[in-house]
Image 1 (cartoon, one colour):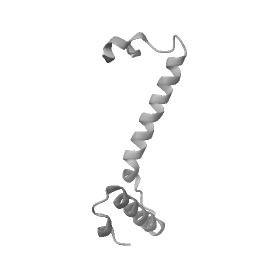
Image 2 (tube, rainbow, N blue to C red; image 1 turned 135 degrees about the vertical axis):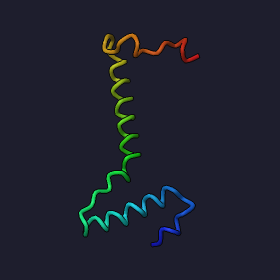
Image 3 (cartoon, helix red, strand yellow; image 1 turned 90 degrees about the vertical axis):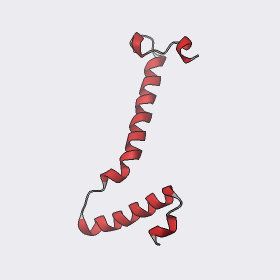
Length: 74
């Protein structure tokens, strides 16, 4: 598998790069955390949104400044 085969598809290119770096990591023990930064940020945002939605279901858990008025959305 060559990385140049996936130059038009970003997701396939990322996956191929990750696979390659994982194989390298087995030999070198390096850290490739920056490759997964985007996914970690998305996961953090998703969790924060879920927590906010759960808190919104219980009256009194959110501050008035955290509650969006329906008028603001219009």
